[in-house]
Length: 373
Image (cartoon, rainbow, N blue to C red; front, top):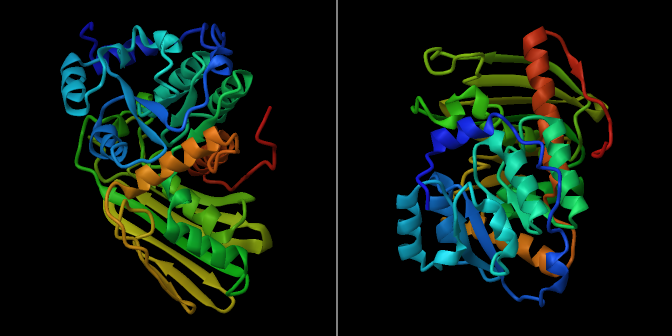
């Protein structure tokens, strides 16, 4: 396996490729026997794959770790030994497209910097594989649409890695809101952030999809959307800032604050930060408030409302295992994904509008366009 560093890979990818939209192998799956467990290959073996997805795939019931894609030979050796991965199921970024010929691998899970999501989602779909893609879905709405189109063209499923849609605390507060058990939502306040002291991660690199709004900000946007049960009509105001310009440079946001207007003039204030440990969701309703803190961590979530405590204890990496099991069951049962590409697209449209508002100092209306072209 060639020694391809992440840095070299990223530089190579910057040039782009016009061949992404062509599908050499979109009908392979039609000839495969029906499976009871799906094989997943992880693309990118950073922290999230190493500490969460890899261990979670040892707990899943409907899928298993079938393969890996990495540009670092040392990681390939370590993962092969730890998880007993066959040599034929280990790929690098140069021979990745050969995965089309491997029936062991049903799903490609893209766990790369956001700037690479579009390319590897499209290449995976063109190879006849279903795709799970980590959040944020992509850098722009157009990239999201290209990913959705590629999966539809190849008749492959696309799911975005929004684990919270699958977990019980989120399901419960959404039930209270959507059934109006406390009446209508009147306002919302949500914040998601942590102190990130790294200086050279992709989250601190603009070209790779850095900035807090793309990362933790998606949780705050999701909190506002799921907590109101509605879609925003307007970004009323937004600001971006940094207290560490030596790290968050080239216009990158360390902290972003925004106010979103929803139907019925319901206002949602959101905050996201790489400079502050904060995580809560307060949903004010006509008959009381739902208070979740923390609301978007990997474990230890809890909340309360006039209807009682919201508490479902579990340990790492339960959320990730549940998410992958649910998504694989949807594939095997030929059902719609709980979090399809269109859901990721909605958030990236909001991200784009928040940045536009922050840059202009003006409100920005959100177009009520469909999730397709």
